[in-house]
Image (cartoon, rainbow, N blue to C red):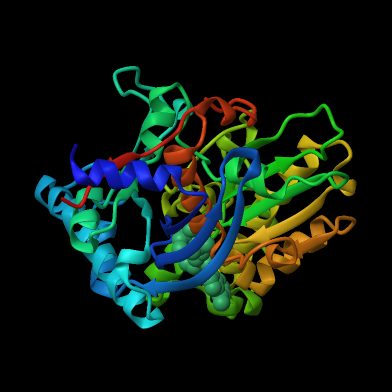
Length: 398
Ligand SMILES: Nc1ncnc2c1ncn2[C@@H]1O[C@H](COP(=O)(O)OP(=O)(O)O)[C@@H](O)[C@H]1O
Ligand SMILES: [Mg+2]
């Protein structure tokens, strides 16, 4: 037997596994590296976050990704090269991080790598029947395995789409396993580039857990800041705070058809981008608004997409406790806007019930890898409208 298969077999039989979860979302801010200690699997899973860091991408790397990210036309050479390059960079960042933590690579059982999404094409976008609903993440797993000497599980989203799912949002199953509460009805809201939530009914409820995207997130705000200020984000909402919300522009943005689709649904910057803003400005005759006013409006647009969905989906929304994670939690105006719209809800940082909110998504990919190696695919079916599959491709270092 290939000794690497033997090793994998031994890892699958362990009671406790050390798994590094990697996440690099649509914000392109950097690579989240979460070292998780995971005991057991399925409903017995116990996850603790041992170490966490985010390694920021440098500007030239971000620019390289942006050349292929959610673009209709790209240079094939750039795409092929980036697939290897991202794998190599992620391996290098893991090696350096483990060195900094004083942890030998040999003590890590598995790496769970999300990769970098470069295009997401859910069913609802399929106006053109010749294009199959699909999603594409790059950052090759073999490159990570070979260069870290750690067995790597990557490309989680493909099997979900192969079984009829949308490939997103995937964090829901881990949310369900780890954070369902006996008596409290919960929404776990993650505000990355795109905002999504997992709904977790309390245990006595007959309602079903599900997950959905709701719209932007940080993505349009980031795109606007990048274009007009040449910086990646509206740090602490300093620009938006100087502006005033323009109701006409907001109303126009809120006409985006995605917002009227039934849940669960999924989206990306392919829809929520500066073209959408441009068209909304034209329709609302607000081409001359100041950058500050536009940022204030975009901030409220994100807050409204999130809050309006929650209000319209749950007649009892006021009784649901909301736990927030993702980079949007660090945008004080966005949090304030959400709290103003959902003023009756209990809204907390995710820290209150679990782990560091910035590490949550990376941890949940570690959990998915744990299920792939040790879990039972038939258990992964508690999420409404999501196929039961163990996800990811296995890359052996040798
Ligand atoms: N201090 C801050 N002020 C404003 N926005 C912030 C701040 N920190 C993070 N963000 C936002 O969060 C984003 C990163 O969020 P993240 O959850 O990593 O998203 P993704 O999963 O898409 O990578 C940044 O691009 C930025 O828009
Ligand atoms: Mg990120």
